[in-house]
Length: 371
Image (cartoon, rainbow, N blue to C red; front, side, top):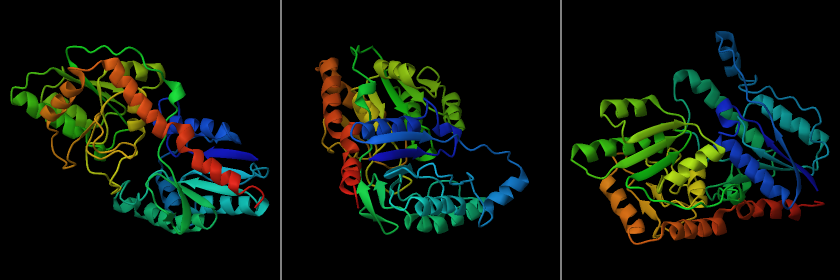
C-alpha cells in the first residue's frame, strides 16, 4: 500500500526543528514507515502581507482564509492519506473534493490534534468571520474523510468515526545520561506558550515563596516563546536570579537543558479546551528524559497516584512552591537519580512510544486494504 502524510502548517512557528508540532509530525511519520509505505509531504508555511485588502479577502465566504489550495493530482497514486488538521475553508473543501474525484479509492485519515477547540484563538469581532467560515466548512470536510484521529477519546467528531490515540514521542531520539543533582532545584517548562498553559502561576508562586522568606534556591528554566507578561513579572518582582528565559530550543540544545533539570512542568492552568486530562507533547518528552512531572491536570498515560507525578489543583492562582519542594525531596533525598530517570523512561516508553501510539492507525489502514 502506498500512502502519504500531509502536513500543511499555517504559521512559521509550527515549522522547523525548534517546533514541537513538526517534531511530532516527523515522529508520527517515522512510526508509520515502520509498518507502511508512507511519504511525508510538508508544505511551506503561509506568508501574509498584512494589507487591509488581504484581511478583507480572507474573511469573504468563498475565498481562501489561509492557504490557496489547488489539487494537481499529487496523491492520485495513494491508497491512504494521513492529514494533520488544516484551517477549514472553501478552498480546502474544493481541494478535498478534487482529490476524491480523481482518486475515489483513497482512504483519508484526518488528525484533529485538539478537540473541542472553539474556545481557542482570538475572540475579537474582526476574527468572527474567520470563526464562522471554519465552523461551516469543517462539516463539509467531515463528509470527505473516512476517519478522524483524536487524542481525547471521542468516538465521533462531526459525525465521523474516530481512531482514538494518545500523543506519542520517538524515544529513539534521546537516551538517558547520568543525572547529577545540584544544590539548586532546577525545573523546566517547554512550550509554545499560551496564557492557558498557566506558567504565570509558577512565576507568581516564586514571587510569593521568596516574599515569605523561602530558603530553597529554585532555578526555573522557561523554554519556548516568552510572553510579555512573563518578563514583566520577573522584572517587577526581581526574580532574575531564579528564572532563565531560553527561547525556542531544539535538538541537543534542548536536551542539554533537560539534563540539567530535575523536574518538568506540564500545564498549570485550567484547560482552554475543557478536556479533563492532558495529552501534551511535553509530558512525553519529560518521560523520555526521565523527569518527574508537576501538573495541574492529570496526564493521560499516568495514573493519578503515579509516584513521579505531582498533581496541583487547577485553580488559576499562584503555585504553592512548598508542595513542589516537598515532591522534589521525597523523590531525590533517598533515591538514586539515575534509577529514578530510568524508571520514568521505561514506563513512558511502554505506554507512549510513537510506534505504540500510532499502531491503531496502522491497523485501520491495513484493515481497509482492498475495500
